[in-house]
Length: 313
Figure 1 (spheres, rainbow, N blue to C red):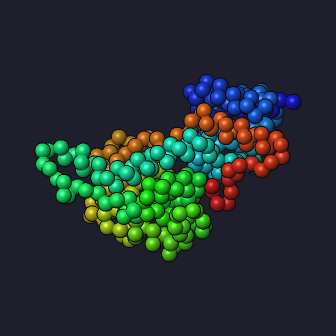
Figure 2: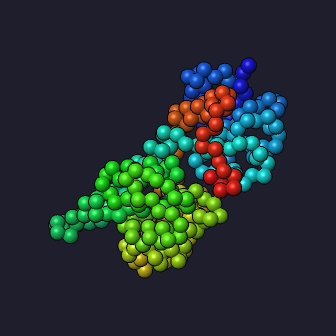
Figure 3: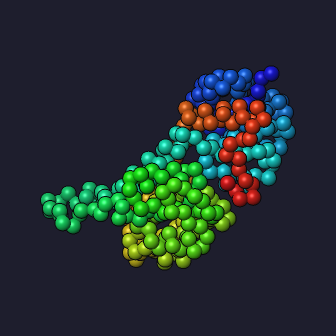
């Protein structure tokens, strides 16, 4: 009997996902009917979902076994009162590799002082003042040790950076000093030369980098936020940069997206804006993750990356 799968993502991405998903289903020997719409919602077994898709009312799908998110972040889905079905967030190789490359790239940019080198092509030889310290002398703090944060922390550690990580609950990761709780949070923000933010957005993490936290960060810290825009108090960040407490920030996520053209972040010389590109979901790899989860559910195995509704991730 065929498995009915509803694709509810951005309509412009449908042709690419249709081909990639059907190929992934075939590789797992799944007999799937994949559509953008079913005449009878009660026939739908699984929903592949993005908030940018055509609907947000899950109550009309009484027999759905799981909602499979195309996004790593689920804060805009998990609060939906009509969602009673199991929800799985997206974790896939392409998304993870993209995030790791983004974080490593911008960490190295700050570590090596590349912005200064690029901006100072003025004929002055600054050999003695522009030699960077080695990676093992640079403290990197990764705030958020989910699948993405853990992958970034491990890669930075392999480059010989002195890496510490922080999460709400204590974790153990090889070669990474893992901290938790308020004391651990204070320690990581006060000792890190570069802070990487990869937390999910919940009530507990909203504005976690606020004026109070920024008053405790190490003088001259650089901040990279590829988690969620609302992790940072924007006004407090600008103030901390302007008074020299924070040397600069690279921001990939924002409270409002697209970032308004008149936002101060665009014109601030010490802030780099990127348009939410750090961890894009790619059809080729995400389709494999979706097929694996449907295969598992159909064979009475536990769903992967199941969201805890209480925690919000």
